[in-house]
Amino acid sequence: MDDVQVRDQLRKFVEERDWRQFHTPENLAKSISIEAAELLECFQWNSEGDRDAARMELADVLTYAFLLADALGESPHDLIVEKLALTKAKYPVDRAFGKATKYDQL
Image 1 (cartoon, one colour):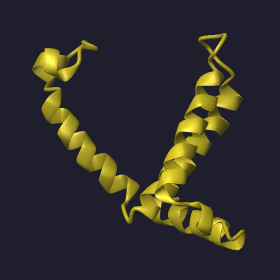
Image 2 (cartoon, one colour):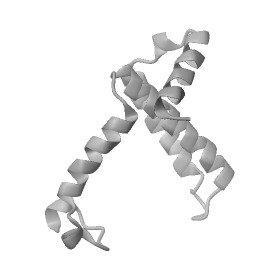
Image 3 (spheres, rainbow, N blue to C red):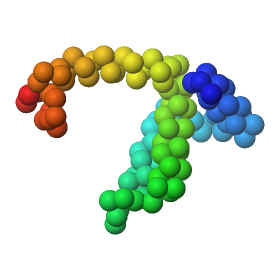
């Protein structure tokens, strides 16, 4: 399934429940943060984590991210490609390879 099909299925799901009224960019951004915290909780006491729970929490994070992109009139694919190009410029391979150093300290 491609991004457009996922978006269309999410739109239908939301529409069937009349939830668009709750899906403001602000509320969706909050929801991403909440779900990301729940994802982190899967690894709270064990670095291996609960894989099944993590998969479902990650799905929640991605769902809200897709919904937020849609609410902003953006394509998740295009946003990722654009940001990747910017990040590649910040972290050139010759300076960043094998390092976790922030770009302004490379």
